[in-house]
Amino acid sequence: MDKCDARTRLMYVLLFAFVFCGEQITADFEGGGGWGGDGGGGSDGGDGSHDVAVEAAATGHGSRKQRVHHHKRHLSRSSSVAAAAAVDYYPPGNALINELGNPENMFVTENGTVVTSQIGGTAILPCATAKLGTATVSWIRRIDYTILTIGTRSYSSDKRFYVDHTRHLKTWNLEITPVEATDAGLYECRIATHPTTSNFVHLKVTEARAEILGAPDLYIMSGSSLRLVCRLQGSTQAPLFVFWYHSERMINFDTDRGLIVHINSTESDLIMPYTNTSDSGNYTCQPQNIPPATIHVHVLQC
Ligand SMILES: *[C@@H]1O[C@H](CO)[C@@H](O)[C@H](O)[C@H]1NC(C)=O
Ligand SMILES: *[C@@H]1O[C@H](CO)[C@@H](O)[C@H](O)[C@H]1NC(C)=O
Ligand SMILES: *[C@@H]1O[C@H](CO)[C@@H](O)[C@H](O)[C@H]1NC(C)=O
Ligand SMILES: *[C@@H]1O[C@H](CO)[C@@H](O)[C@H](O)[C@H]1NC(C)=O
Image 1 (cartoon, rainbow, N blue to C red):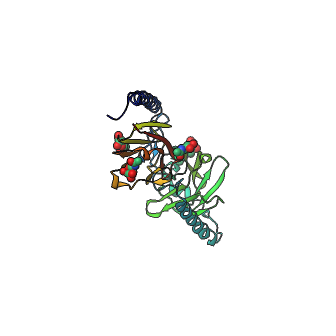
Image 2 (cartoon, rainbow, N blue to C red):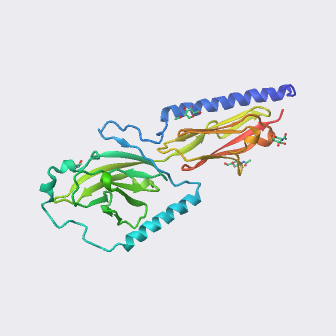
Image 3 (cartoon, protein in one colour):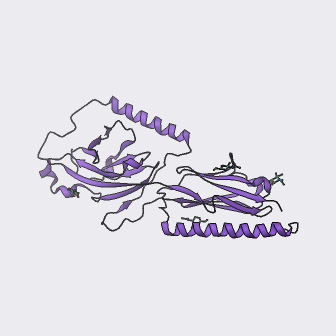
């Protein structure tokens, strides 16, 4: 700093004031919005329904490899569907309802459950049954009355829909992956008794996004440390990883120069203990399941 002349010092003060104001505005904005979940759904309240934690891995915006993997998984699912011969899915008997008693006792999952999932993530719509007998469970999308699944078989040409059936738990959860904005709405888990009995699940879809505090421009003096904070908003499942890039180069593992990266479900921090002018440029935060955010860092020589 001793080398800095008066003009550089003045510029530094002005820039610092500018950056500080920028961060305040960002902080105020975020305070109003509130952060998204922490891997589990928040309480919905109000309508007496309850949210369900959405787990499992998501399809990454930045991960082509993973998408290919998903694609293969769906292919193998669809071929097993194709291999299955068409049979009568409805039980022939009609005395089932007497055997089962009150239809409201047929579901363990609360009727009207709300599930919140982020675009690109995995939604798990719960349907846990009791005393099912031989009755078949199907999932119907109520926006257009499309039959998605009957039993464990997929009936939609859209291979993002899949039933995860666990026999001993009597669960017939509908999995949607990757979730799209247009998937939002009402879904029906129907048991083919006579008459049929149904439970409803509301799917809410959020758009998660990343934001680097202080963006779009950050000014620091050569020799000082750099700390970048990347906030994840509207996120219902924590990213499996967050990559940081300086221009095109991934820098997460530049530990030889003391660089540290912290990641949790709501943010990722990058700490560079010492900077020089060659550290100037664009820094990008790329969470595995959320579109990236960028900040332009200007390291000033004095
Ligand atoms: C769930 O709620 C819907 C309407 O809100 C109703 O038609 C249906 O019978 C209910 N299901 C059960 C099992 O109570
Ligand atoms: C994530 O990390 C930041 C800073 O390291 C911390 O302030 C925040 O409380 C953490 N959040 C969670 C959910 O652990
Ligand atoms: C800046 O720092 C890096 C790593 O510490 C070093 O390799 C590079 O030579 C430095 N550049 C300047 C202009 O001092
Ligand atoms: C940084 O990114 C912005 C747009 O995001 C681009 O216009 C600019 O040229 C980039 N700067 C550098 C140094 O890469």
